[in-house]
Length: 279
Image 1 (cartoon, one colour):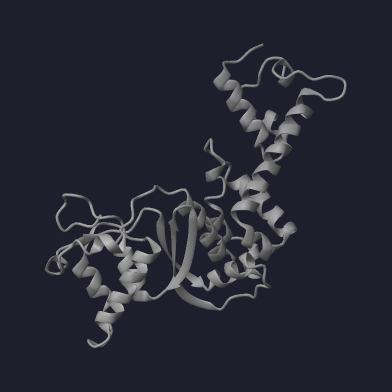
Image 2: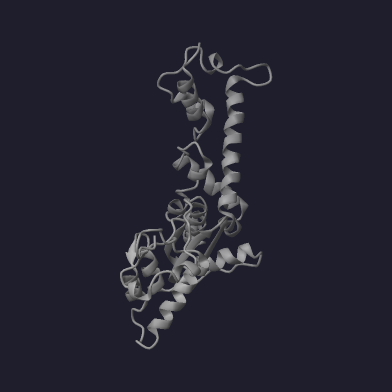
């Protein structure tokens, strides 16, 4: 018996990802192949057709497990190998990969952790996983030319009020309930990590060239950067950065923040011929 290639691929995928194994997955098939699995997969005295597909099922799981260990090294370090293995087993049952690339395999893990029993012992782990997932997504985000400080001088000061700016696509703002960045930093530095404090905070994640960085930021900076997910007037960004500051301190705070954004490569480059637009 033969099946069209697409149908055969879909059948094998369903069997390989069946939560309780190939035999049970085959039993759940509404239209089983005539002659059973042996009509599609050759077995021998050592391994039946079912056993051969089971080998692929095991390989598939352990490959995904290794991918997720690489994507979530701090989550792995916090939970330990056994807890992480069991977590991923349950996660892949609930969220079978649906994309050709393994990049999407772990995208639902932070959300999955928010309802997982492990949170009783590690209440911060969902925020930690969210930070790690965001780092992966920022690393793969689209490139964009960045605005250099030297280019900024070409914009006449009197036109800054109507100038428009935008942050690079390879950036994200997180709002979390735990100081998860402290745990990730400790794991990256190979230091002993400590459970973080439950404290609302904001984290900026961005990429410059091939390096992803992250840092905690204040409320004003987080609000300003959130605005810059779209092209925004520079004057409006300044208003947000100055919010709650004395008039004597606001100008310097704005200058310092913008200088840091330029140094970090967060603002997109001025378009030639676009007047006072920086985007």
